[in-house]
Image 1 (cartoon, one colour):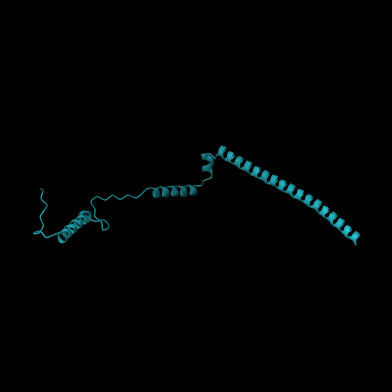
Image 2: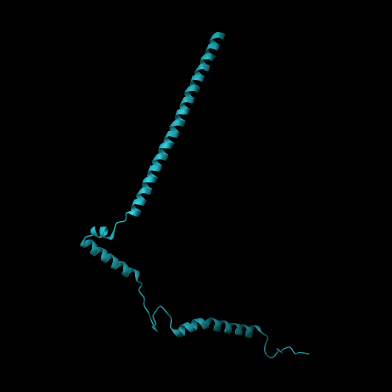
Length: 148
């Protein structure tokens, strides 16, 4: 029994060592694959960035001339372009109405405006005078203080 137990332990130990070797190899492969994919992505991004920059430089240096742009236009396109331009100009200009001494339903007249401004002051003055009259002492009993 003792020999077989030792044999089993040796086999287990050997199996573990083989598994460790295999796992180490797989981890190394995975790391190298990740590094390789990272380099591929970096190269692709670099090529895209370089291509984009080249395209922008090309478009900046090679602008179509007026003749090139007008060659591509037909008479119908020119008419629609003119109609669109005049339509935009009409939309840009604001409409202005000037009214001088014209009374409308929305705006109050001169007298109504003055009354709206003066009415609160008149009501407050009348109310305070009424309260003073009601709350104050009667006139016949009241004598103002005299200096001695």
